Image (cartoon, rainbow, N blue to C red; front, side, top):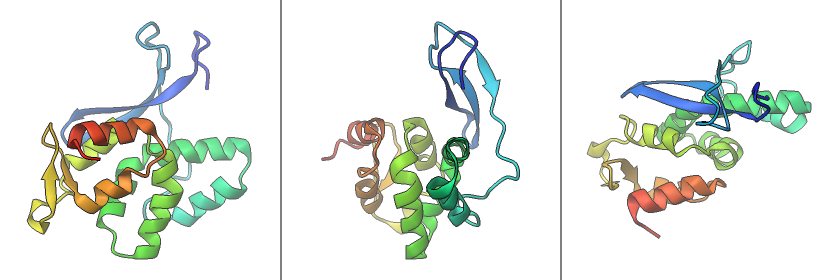
Amino acid sequence: MKCSCGNEMRLVFYAPRERDYTFFWGCSNYPNCRMTKEYIPMSPKLDIAIQDTMDAIKILEEGGAEEKVSIINEIKVQMVDILNHFIDCTWGAHYMTLFNKMIIPYLDDPKVLQFVLNGPIIDDSKGNVFRGKSGTKMYKELYFYLMRVEAERIRDFLFIEFNRT
């Protein structure tokens, strides 16, 4: 999608409060261009993290170019739910599918990851939790999974926040 200034629009994660967040389209030329547009979810809405995982994967594998772009955007918008479900899921086939098909290729915003890691999904009472420089919580095994994400921005965030190799 193009901005009125001619640059690409990108999805922007905005979390004004601790457990409240939204996405919107923002110009990639920010701060020179401050154009924004509302993000409108797919219709009908897919619950990619739990019920409609395989439907989303089928679109990624077999859909047309426009469908693929729409589902990738929806995956990014639902990444908080996808990550929360991945962390909490006990069904190996499902959480590995989420990880390999959605998290590895499409988790690309450190703010989204930090939002999840600061939330209640990382439970100190379960043990094996360590904290980052800003107080962000992490499980050891989760750290090593997340270091496999394709986006260098995510790996850089993890390395800097948790000062690990």
